[in-house]
Length: 437
Image 1 (cartoon, rainbow, N blue to C red):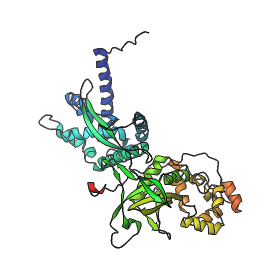
Image 2: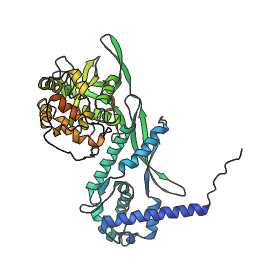
Image 3: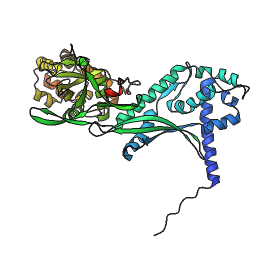
Image 4: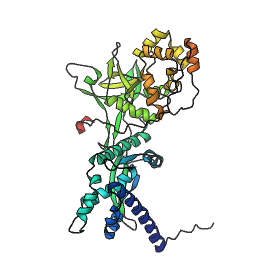
């Protein structure tokens, strides 16, 4: 069996490769300088300082497992593949009235230029003051710096959810820059990946012991994966003890119902909005003593998380879609349409995909019926969830709905293809102390 020969890389090839890297870097830096301060800025930087900037350049982001943590290679591969696609079309204004440049360039070349300009010393370079003044529209534009910072932490949270699943393991990203030494220097933008398997417990319902999973929030900004503690006042309970905080758990049945009924949205996005719905809670007390927590997508109600307090724990037992029996809207829909549970299943109006692929606004009578039942949120979701819909092009059930309810289609309405992105800013609730988690 022949041995595979190792590829020999000569000093000439290394030198040639570095030369190519320099040309690429200086080209990007020149374009950025022109956008930040105008033509001729790049040429004002002395050659020796350009060489230093190259040695201290910010390299593209890369993903590594945090020390002593078990992160599967498949997870790292998913992150490395998804991150470029996520940031690819993101742009940012580098000056108040200037052009927009790729965010990926701002958080590498732009950040380095900010640091370089801040440290310019007239004692070392006689044109330092002139260069600083030329770049002032860029360096003084703090909103861009804050926006870039917010977007990156939002992306880091989003990426964490992208590979997380409450059923198995959660992941959180931590930004950890480091200096690379060797033939190709630079500042490495390292994203460390932390992992945590959610705690599981058992609770008894109707004499049967059932498993439940601790609900946690991965947060890049607060650098951790935090179990959620819910103040009883958030559930609508008042009086003594309303400020007491209980741990939140969810049953696998509820997670399964969430994916079955919001069936056109990826699991990681559903679990991300699960966290947001808890952190920005809207809760109602039901007649049977349970709690209905509104599940919201982009601040629009899509259904309810049904929870109970058992053994000083809040347990989410199931998820009800907005039209399901057991919700105020589902009961009202039954009254205005005489629909029963089996009817809803037959018509598939107990799933979000039906409304995503059948715009009920094209029938004013059908639209009016759902609005009368308090289901106008379905009209909002049709537009707001368009960018998340993984079942685009599925056969529309609108003709069957119109026929079933005995209404005729009298108006044509073609909604634009709105591909909305994930919100640019996500707010998280910081734990009060280490003892809270």
